Length: 184
Figure 1 (cartoon, rainbow, N blue to C red):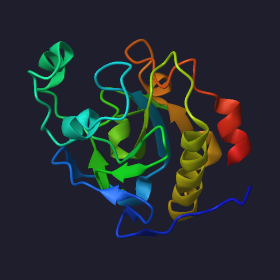
Figure 2 (spheres, rainbow, N blue to C red; figure 1 turned 45 degrees about the vertical axis):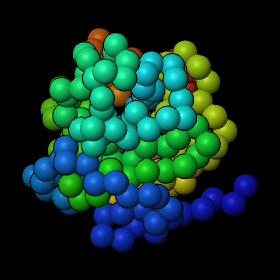
Figure 3 (cartoon, rainbow, N blue to C red; figure 1 turned 90 degrees about the vertical axis):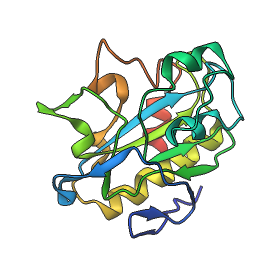
């Protein structure tokens, strides 16, 4: 397989659809982007292929659409990228800005991972296998980010559970880290 690298211009990935999330702010130091955090998300839980994740990151989630949404609709969260099960990529926050994806988090002794990380959400759950298309697109995105942000290395690609242990479990045991490493 050819190892494609996407262009990044003005903090936006060329292969993505852009939908501006209001849930962002300035990074303390854009030259300190050093980490990629892989997440897993499905809304409603274990349901795929709808607009609910987008609505969540855009503060447009209808609390009446599903009982779970009443619990989360007040949260203000975002991510840089969402990779759907078919490989489609949506970007919600430019890379030079801080997306609100990691929450209370620590990496290598440094707290507040949102300050220096890029969040990539995969449409999925901890228990169900992610798709081949997602692994291909995730590897392309990671290669592109490594090329554009020199402090990011393959060792600095981690799961949400790695930076928020005990609080978060995603992307879960269904995520194949060895597969991702072979694709990088």
